[in-house]
Image 1 (cartoon, helix red, strand yellow):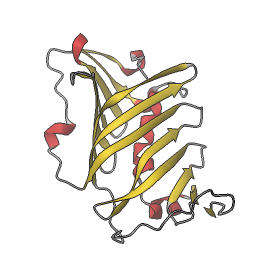
Image 2 (cartoon, one colour):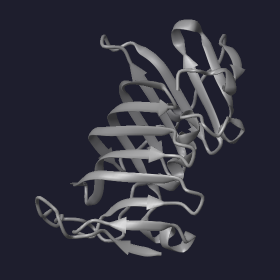
Image 3 (cartoon, one colour):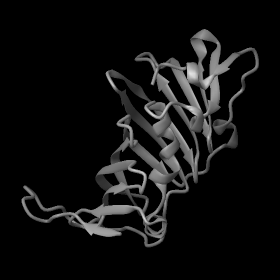
Length: 209
């Protein structure tokens, strides 16, 4: 289903993006990020970086103000692992096994979030366009949704400044992208983790998000 966003009542009119290359999508992404997660009364956040490889593999790291790694997260399809270096402890398991209200479970939507418009049309999900034809929001048949804010041209791809992911149970994750690089080569080693000497606990015991 295709629904155009209302053009009335807008304070400013957005200018169409120029230089967008038809058919070019996001295969890889490197970006500094700011991230916040909310679930019920609990919220957390920080700054770090994200390395993504289509369709659903990524490495996310949160850093301290002094540049030390506070948390690393690795995702490969449904398998998700959080590593806390200061504790030499990791939490690993399937996102599908987490409670539905978990903000962390929203990360399982990354493949859907990054999917091109064509796949959204084929899936039967609903999406809403802004006045220049960019996807402003899309909603899955199950009630999950993502909002895309502040599109800009990044290497010929229309890419948002931030995304807000909300699952059907109200948990939310917001990611702001800072100086993103799109479709640059990704070292496979950056998407893998070494748990040698690390205590591994069930993912359900991880409480930071």
